[in-house]
Length: 367
Image (cartoon, rainbow, N blue to C red; front, side):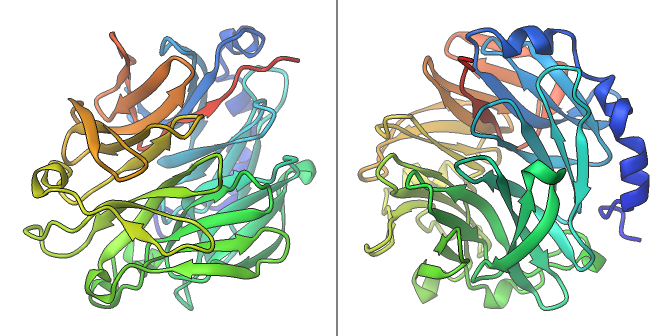
């Protein structure tokens, strides 16, 4: 069995109260305070993998163990439930609460599928959409899970592309945006990219109720190796996205852009100096709540940058070694690194574990 594919029975047997016992007592207190909770997959100091919830000061309030490396964490609309997904090509996920007293729920992708590390809840929180690979046909699918029935898988629909990665529910509550990275993979070959010479990335808009393709956006044919991977949604439904280029390192293609239903995809053409700093790799994308500020990270470029959503112009940047996770709080941008650094303004906290690629924020709960 491939090392990334966790046997379902072994995972479920090891989940349950073993995970529950890992919840920090402060999780219950944090869930009742005015703090936002910041979620990330991570690797602990002993080499084990897990996920954590932090408060706005970077203090750990909850931790859970995972059987292998995680990638991103989906946040329920009410902020009281989190789902950590396996990194591609893993097949496990874990739903957990910020406080003790509720047993986490472990679930998995079905036979012939694996997760791509990202998911998104429906507006009412009843459904969870997860990007998956039908790896025998090399086609992307969106798995649909019933959050009210221990995340039982109730269906799937086409992602309308290959290698779907990040998925978002747009503010209208009816439209899903999916970044199809265009890269073919198969668990038998681990994380190997099998079709770099014939990639076909896209960003698609899908009807969340029916799976119907609303629109498909692709970069120009000359940029078919520009893998569209991550994105953030503006209040008006516009999507800001970031890319990872699989072509020659000496090329400097545009790495971020915008798309919206009814409009032509736009790649931001920026000066070579701005683009070169990212070393052809945008690791995460975040947008402020009012849509006025775009943030981009590059662990290969060791930087986090602020940009204009209107034209992609870089406004400022900061050095953060192996920095990738970014998210906006009311107080501004927070970022994290593979070195274990939590950064917010003048605060730099060493957390004692290595952050994975993404941060997800649950707004403070009011009731």
